[in-house]
Length: 290
Image (cartoon, rainbow, N blue to C red; front, top):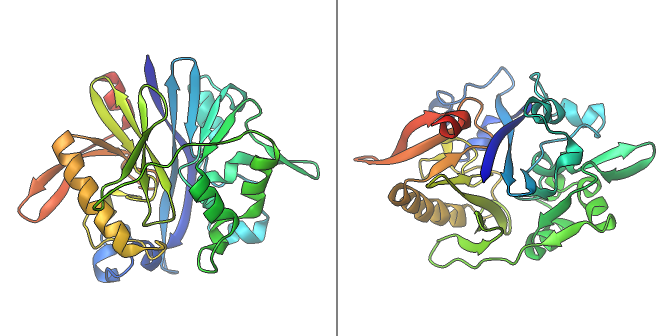
């Protein structure tokens, strides 16, 4: 039986203009109001999947091994931590069997590695770490624009530990996300607009389909097609991927799980005269208890 848990690891701040791309501040500021430095708060929300005898953690936040100068740029705040959120459901890091990394930007994989004295070691001692070869090669040989998001101390120790495994890359067509199987209840969708070969878990749960949106749709505010992050490497690819996925999600009555939305965990979608919009917002716990 599959069980799902929302794992909150706190909040951080990013520039609102970078998060909303070409959309004017006069519009996006109504969605996520900026502070005096033009920074908006964003969640660092992960997903824990209990799938048979496997306990799969999807992403793991920023971690805490970077220095004060690094974190001063991102203003971490809130009371949630990875360990506190796992403990809320009776789990610890050592219970995790699989760490599924949607992609290797620091806010998604920083908790993978911890400092023990002068060594960098996996923060999940009993876990296998999952990426894909296409994205891994992209991350360890980064372009100048994306280099600041791929921190070697978050990435290389995973490979050095011998616990890194690759998922075969699914190939999409006509903007549709590629797809491959991970477990009986979890498929992996592949998106290439934000970064190369980002992976989105698509979970079968009690007759429902739940998709962990990672940075294809970091928040509900990014559902409108033009709302594409300035961080995306290939924004026109993101546009195609969003358009195809949103159509599929409405038709399939998917539930979207947001990694970065500061307020909303999940939503469904609906067709309107002005395009596809959110239908209902709710917490993951409401799905589980229904």
